[in-house]
Image (tube, rainbow over all chains, first blue to last red; front, side, top):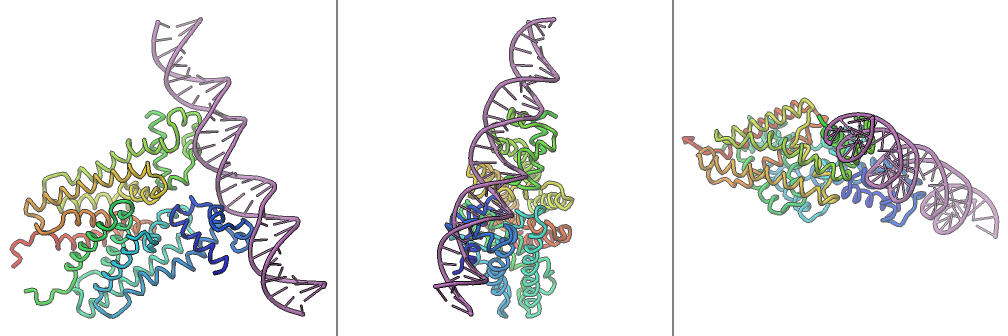
Length: 198
Length: 198
DNA sequence: AACTAATCCGACGCATTGGTCGGTTTATTT
DNA sequence: AAATAAACCGACCAATGCGTCGGATTAGTT
């Protein structure tokens, strides 16, 4: 792994753990036993560094963990359930969860750094579009009630996911994950196609 | 209003806008045209200052906006809907929303300041207990299906609320609020008592 | 008026921040 | 082996962070 890569990986870890503004460049360099010179040889600034982390690490991980898993052609709601289940499971084990990471950074940069916010919002937008598309596909395939508002469901799913991750920090993450998944199944019952229920 | 109060109110505003670590004591003092001496006469430290803000401002506001509105004895789900509706409406108008504020600070202090986290988690806990109680009351009163898991519903409601607030920053808050409220009504359909539906 | 206590001022100390830069080491080419 | 470029070091800078402290102002008491 190149020095540049190591810096990004370690940088993301520390930014995730302590926040962007609360992590100094020196912190990252100390962790890697590198010097200021090495850092500013590879990156223009701390901000440039973070933007590259977004593009090289965060975007890709969001794709692999939240986008691609629901692009299949099976039963849409099952895809989403499994996707959330997997993502939350990594969260339970204290690993980095990129949906949460996203909302964390959005909170931190909101109103403070428009340039970075633009990147983060763009990722959120892609997530939203993917969900909307999946739900429309579900409606088309007859799995989801054709009266439901796809945009609304997407926003609702995203918000609940982001929220549960905040609630999973510190207080019984495993139990909360279980409860959350149960309730989201309840919700899905309300929006899936009523087939032969009367 | 006493100097101490003004400091807390302005402090909370700036902490809300820029985050705790990203707001210096000097920022607050500049806003109020006061000096370091005045600050450290009234407060021991920046952290002590924040703890007092939690106790004097945040706790009370959370009570009045998220706790008390759902302690009534009318139809539980209606109370919750109205409570969320009102809270999100203030959020749309860029006013301070104390549910969001809570999750914001939780994200910021998580893993960084256990002392403050304790206070914040305590408030969350009270919110959760209030919701659980309300839902159990709804089950008892026959408004909510008696098979539902009150804890689960509470966690789900909290998470979706916290999440939608994150999604409401920057991107069409009003539209997202509307969509969110619609979907939460859908969800409520899934958990309310089935009365004469067959 | 005289005294005391509460309130507030602002210069200062010390640590840390992001960032610069001249110079050294290491790798690659010729 | 010599020359060049890539990679890295670490002392340094200006700005800013929190917190201290001696003294000035103001309000309240007697």
